[in-house]
Length: 584
Image 1 (cartoon, rainbow, N blue to C red):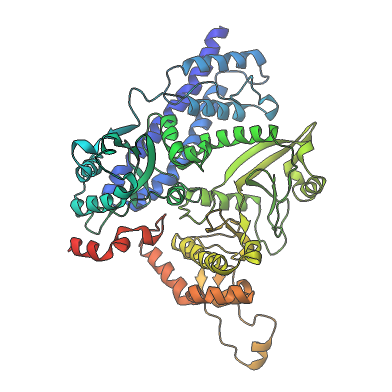
Image 2 (spheres, rainbow, N blue to C red):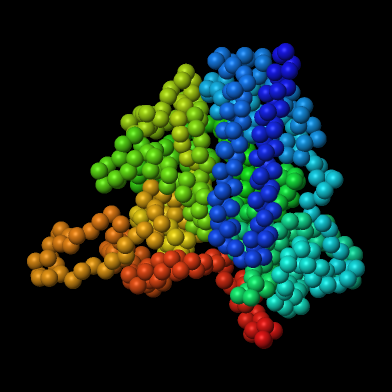
């Protein structure tokens, strides 16, 4: 009877995971058709829907188990046997690491935190994931010495089965060759040692499909990404080839939506990408290809490992304190931890549920490279000895309802984790010359990109933006965001008489949905140097007409393509004269 129960429970969890992964793969594979037909609305809907698949299947599995086993009191040895049996079922499985995370999610939904340990869940991985793709390789090797470099890339471009015609494939392969040739330094000596490893599936996101691969020259890899776009006639063209490590990191940035990429063996794809993205952790890479729950699992393991090998204290995060969140960090670890405050000041007309909804909105929205992704955790235990006295006092004052001190641990009921950035206001205090100018220009571009994606940032003070290690400015304070189509863009009315104009009080009626772009300069650009630089690059943001134009384009369902690489990298700009000539 016991053996039968162990098998039924372990099998039901694995069945729940299989249902999840099957549905995940179905909607991911459909990305090709959505791209071929330029179904951008369908792609956005699929992106949002796919994020919820995991939690839906976990809830479904939990209900299934609760109907078939008495969970009033946990049987310690029973669940050890279930975990052991589950591990046996993962032998020869193609996604064992994902299945382990699914098991953890089900168990943690069933039981209290006190049972979360190595005996009951996979705090450490239980199965190896090396060489799982040997039957169906994740990438294909292409050898240009058999057909020539241009012909090789023509074959690569045609290998993915896209149904669209090419605008001019000969032009595109010629442009690819012009970029790649100096890097691989083809000559009679090196040519026999050259080949290209190309991931077998395209990476789909927004309005582009990406070829991901590497040139291997004398056993030295040179990673590259080739973005494919569609013209107005739905003909394919190559927009560029990216080989710079900075550009590749931005393609897989935590500020971008997750890729749609079909893979039966995620670990093999991650292994491939890990070698071409040395600044991205495995957690980052799993997340970027849509397996954000696995990204959370790996992040937490990495954090526990870091805690064991460090001794610094958790402290209040530098910068101006927020009114909605209490933020703290570990100086030796590049992330911040954000907890919703128990109460908000009167000017913040919202509650906890509203704040959580705003963060969920960012998770499911196109972040256009300008908003940080967040990891959301529940019942997180930190060693109490790692808290500074100042931080612990602050948490007791601001988030006591989310805080429990359980023996040697401080348990936080609900928190968000984000990449740590330098707040823009702090960055600008020490920035000089081009660095200062670039940051202010990037700040304005961030606002323009965000509103073009139909998000109104709300509070656009400099302190709510941060600077990444690449010098890119992104937004990270989400409690006041809303669709820009719900905002009423207004001009400040003319004062009717002098007393109104000189009054410290607003003399005209306003509502929560009103936004006056002309006030931008007064409330955000109060630093003279910032103001001068901002007006040089983004004076249009002070004009109501600019914001209304963006609103109208969204209402007209016009979808702007925001490139995850600089405009200068694009072939139409890099080879403008020849590109125009060849396109005629």
